Image 1 (cartoon, rainbow, N blue to C red):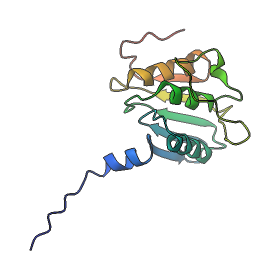
Image 2: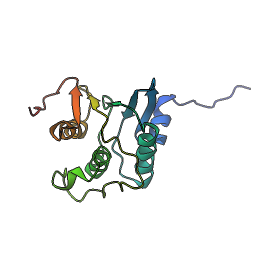
Image 3: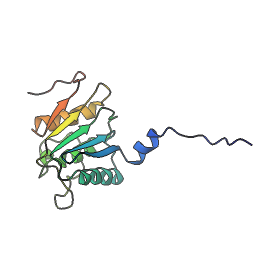
Image 4: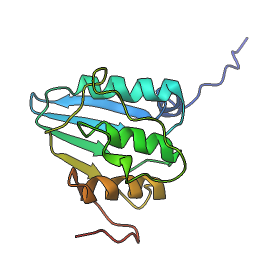
Length: 154
């Protein structure tokens, strides 16, 4: 008798199970790679993103890949932004509504000095582009990839 168990594609459950954190890696000893496919609004997503940031502690440069980012919640985008600053940089630069509180500096490893390159594509969500542009405007990142109709600030 044949088994009728259906197998799911390998990538879909992995990404969903990690709450938007698709891949985290150290590239040699100097750079880190962080692929974020969603800004999911949940305690589990905050934990997943914080754990990813901790894995990149001490790197000299960060590649933040948003090319497959499908969007999500403004508050989570604000929270992720706060991880790239010593204090809550978004206090006056909020996306909208009431965002999640910024990450507590005493409990989260932050990449305060590491330069950040944010990879975007035409498939990057509008929220992903806004997030990238905010990091660029605040002097924390350089955007790499097509602007997809969004105007970057100089």
